Length: 300
Ligand code: NAD
Image (cartoon, rainbow, N blue to C red; front, top):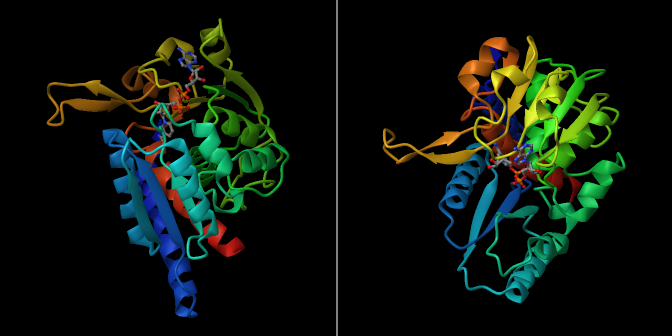
């Protein structure tokens, strides 16, 4: 069993990005700039934003956090989005999700200029991805693609089971896997993802275990700790665990620990490759945001 070390691969990609950005700045051009909009005080969101800001600093991307109180209205947030669309100094920006319940997330995401949509969540970018056109791809599927590629895990002709159908992870992941390689993502380093036979499962799927047992690769993004158990995984499979759930843990100084969607200890011995949680997909998601920001900068 080989552990897919997202932390290590993300560090390597950050080093590559730093070199590229230093070369850009050495020519007299300004550094790429990312803005991160956050509304309210969701502790998990604040941690993600802090990690993104730190990663930007490490590679030389200027990053600005724009924070609003929960009381901001949808109309006011739309005005802020319009300002960011018009700001020529900002190459890309994200609106950290989730938003408070009085704000319609889809309304906000749809207002983002797709050229600055470095989370790849606007209908324009998603549509371009579906049509196999160059686009900015959602950070987590991009990160998983990069991780598979850098470990030379080919997807061509393989049966990949994606558990979860969210707009952020499940759907775009399934699209990247099933289409011809290299269409939407910039060329990845090794064996690109694509040309797989994909099955998408979700909360209403009735025979999840039977479907998973036919998978060469399982990618699970359900937010349901230990959903994937050893009896669902065949020998030699690859398992990518996207799930991050905070579960109470009195033994942890923070009072909680992060749980993935896979019963790791029981599943890992059966796998050819598996991601840990934390340290697998999470760091890859953050580094993909940096890659997307540089991609947006290069297009401006
Ligand atoms: P979501 O809640 O929008 O979607 C969850 C999906 O899982 C749904 O489509 C649902 O149908 C499916 N699902 C739920 N329970 C199921 C079950 N028992 N059987 C089969 N399918 C089931 O979630 P999301 O935004 O896609 O995130 C999923 C998980 O991934 C969450 O834990 C989230 O925190 C995590 N996440 C991690 C990263 C990362 O970088 N590691 C990035 C994004 C999301």
